Length: 203
Image (tube, rainbow, N blue to C red; front, side, top):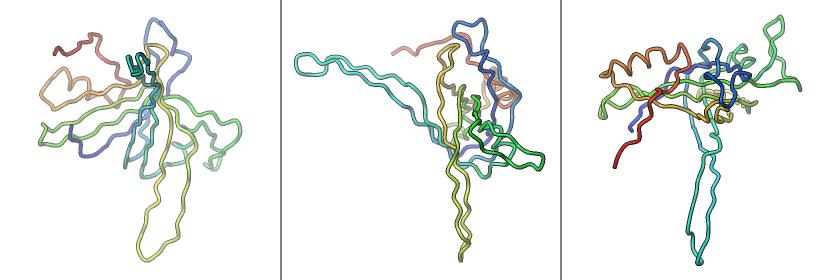
């Protein structure tokens, strides 16, 4: 699919106590927080692989996703958002303290990517259900003859939920299906869960 950007970047902190295997309902999340303006996001699957050798060749092979590495370059990270994502505290002056007691929370990361008009337009909506960010590298550069912006890149890990083993979900919306649009118009208001009925394409 041809995608031409990324916009809309929201965070829903997860109540990890509600993420239980075989629970009666999906985990609960807090109210959405708009993080920043997105510049680039990279989602890299981490794989576990196994091969069965027989008669001096590979007879069976298996690959499973264990997690996803997340790299998120944004325009800025304000102090309250830094404290939120990295589990840090702010003081009465608005400063952010980094201590040995910091514990970054898990949460859902939601965003959307515009699709090229050549493939129907609209958006692809994405959500990562259980993601945790980690302290990031900070760069500074002296001002020269040209202006070079220094923007933060957050890195983290997205893992599967204990509740249902779900990593992430994507949904395309070209504006032509009412049932899909009813879901995507609330994408940044609540954590969207996949539809109850699963289908596997034939062929």
